[in-house]
Image 1: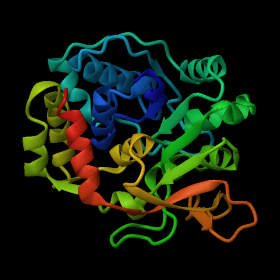
Image 2: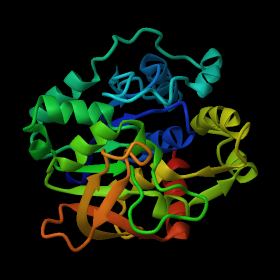
Image 3: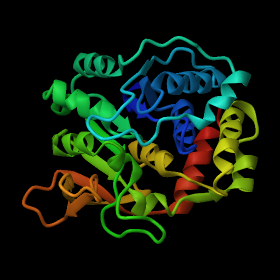
Image 4: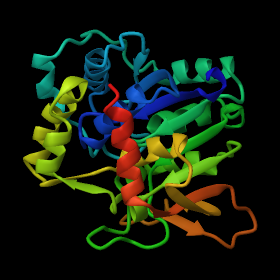
Length: 299
């Protein structure tokens, strides 16, 4: 039904880790998702916009607005300058030309046109969102909610460091975003995403046919260095539409900016007097995968 549709702005660093493309495939297949636009962030954002467009076209969705965003962090050095998965562009139709650095203005105008309705879903470094919130401080309050894949909060999973990639790639933008106060903020971090992994062979089978094939081909660049896919970003996307797969805990998240070595570390205080952030602390992996593939196999 129309009232069940969820307006979403999707901010992504698609083209580095394969999970961004996996998340976009879900959003394009989710009948309840009103995808208002895609914005790209971090190194070579125009190339990332081309990749997003190639996936949209593969799914028969030329209607989705796509805007290139910030290519560099606010103050620190760029840690993600290249787009390894760009190789797939030679084999798939896509728009070549995207105006540079227009994403923040697009986000601002879109959110202001529909106050209280839009979910901002961010799954990359938080530069676009940080710039948006800094340039127009009223924007966070005009969102329905902000759902993000960023941070690590309660228990560092084995093999993971103290910091998380999206939060640390632009720590100053991350600090701005976590200091903002949208009506609802849900944070999906490494505690839960690292429990949702799939081996390369199984992933290839799942993404070998129909519009999903482009995601499978993009994944081959990822598999050159890693034998598994961790479904970081798709878990955040699913959290927008399917309550109950994740369990959240309220608290306050603050971002470390003083320490050079740990800049971007997310401090979570569940007993703070102010608790604006809902942090994911548990996940049902089987329910997640069942829901995810039920949705994307419709396409």
